Length: 366
Ligand code: DAH
Image (cartoon, rainbow, N blue to C red; front, top):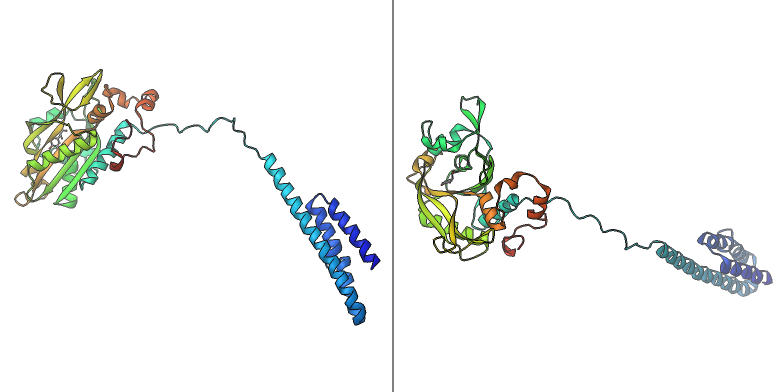
């Protein structure tokens, strides 16, 4: 018994002194491990008389419990000390520079294309695409401009030197209108699409670049008339410019692929060196800016695209995306759009998180 008491005291002292979890574990093994002295003492109970055992057993169990409690308590102490030490070592230095902000931005043309798609999707339009390297038939002939048509000359077309396998001339599309033909041939009528994309003409000055962007629109169904066209354009421009006082002027014009044809102008005023849409272009201090062409799709075009013009008709439009981007976001030189100057891009570009959404008012930024 005295032996047990002194062994216990030695163990408790060792526990008190243990300064690592390993040291503590060594004490545990020595006392409570399978071959530890407490375990050995418990084994001696078997050889005892019942009287001896009833006295020795509680004593040994008490020693065991006392040591186990001391081990637990010390273990908790050592663990929380270790955590404290770790926390103290792992401080965050808030004086470090902030992480670099994202480089690059979304080009205003891309942003405006997303805005267009958002608005027209809400009006039930799907987005269609076509190739930028186009053939003569889709770009001209099927749009009612046969080889001798004078309107072809107005397009300043970039032709490829080699003809296509079927003998047709290949070119860079001069407008997005060939997507009308491709989409009708693919899907037939009824149809309601927009087709934004790049187009090319051999032309360059402050308001013309050899590559620019258009968005084509096409609605073919039964009983579609010019009133639908006017409503659609007005509704679009109000949503796009985020103001109600948009004045559109539809001017009689001529395009081979529409009949009747109109040109679409929007009223604007000059505010400093910025053009701001709104107001009547004929009033003092206002003017009209031409945004594109439109009209009722010519019967001949529907025939070329395999649609019966006695059953279906509709309207089409083609708008200059760069122009409406300039008007909305206040850029005044078209050439700067495509110079790739990082200063221009960081000034006029959009953050990738500025996703246009109708629910947020399509414009990404004031
Ligand atoms: N494709 C014409 C151009 O680039 C623009 C145009 C006019 C498109 C009238 C149309 C339209 O869809 O109906 O000059």
